[in-house]
Length: 401
Ligand SMILES: *Cc1c(COP(=O)(O)O)cnc(C)c1O
Image (cartoon, rainbow, N blue to C red; front, side):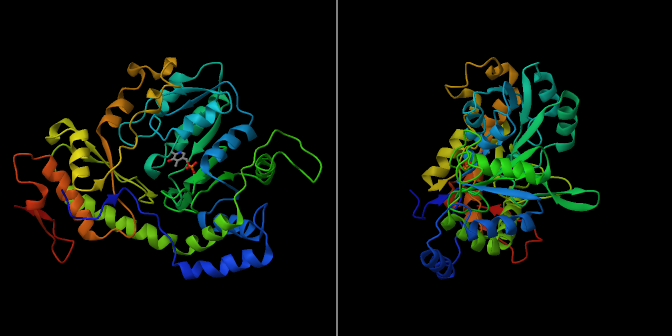
């Protein structure tokens, strides 16, 4: 048994507490706790600027935002989506009485494969709901072409894509500007957190206004209700925290990048262990560090997962099981295994390793050593492996026994 403190897949970033106290003082003084208060308005404005998006509506969480996004576009019938996501993606369809149709993913990006989207379209299809998995941008151009050809809406579950940019016409632009709407999550486990929270990015003021009405019960003024809206409003407490988090988020993402780079050096050349390609012409946010444990590794994914647990390293199998395997989805025609071979294979191999801004290099090395040892059972256990870390990271790292 390890004597180390447990290491989780993430450790939420929080600003120094004393920096938050003036915000709390203002809330206590003004007694504005919710309903589009000053912190809420300020956070919407600052996020638009920070992310480079035209309009944003804050929410209590991304799941409520996904449900409302579908409502705002009046989506019905069937929506094509990925089985390789967090369950909230498909749940948001079910909450709107929409039938999810699962299509397989691309083996390189792990995002919805545009060719499989096109093959899944029926006369009932009204929209596509892809996710930018682990922050890797979808093939947004191909998805837009399909949506235009078949007159479909596109709602991106962009829960992983805060701050992700891609090169467009010589400029780095936010991936959140694609589709009819994009939804981000500010949950504790995400790159930018407000404890709980989320938002919808809209392309125009009219769409934002409809969304803002829907998240406030459907009220358009004190006495007029025009839709069966919900309560999806972010509180002033969460918005104030967001304002403070925003000051630190670039630095946090930069440190995540260093953690990822160290993992990549430590795992270079390890047989049977695949790391995802770095996205081309994009600025990633390093929100997750998934590895795929293939047949050539020497141990199964689940054996590695258990070996890590024994060392107090809590890696997560995002995304296993597939959404299409949960009881409320597995009866759907599109949930059958033959329809989703790539998603199934990846789901059986994936392991998301700890990555967070306050993670020490020594902990990254400990995780890597434990994984490499799990794949080489005839060699001594992880504790006997010493990682030689050169002072300069230009030199490849070597594991010596
Ligand atoms: C986290 C997550 C959600 C849900 O976000 P909440 O803010 O927790 O509701 C939805 N989709 C994906 C892909 C996620 O990772």
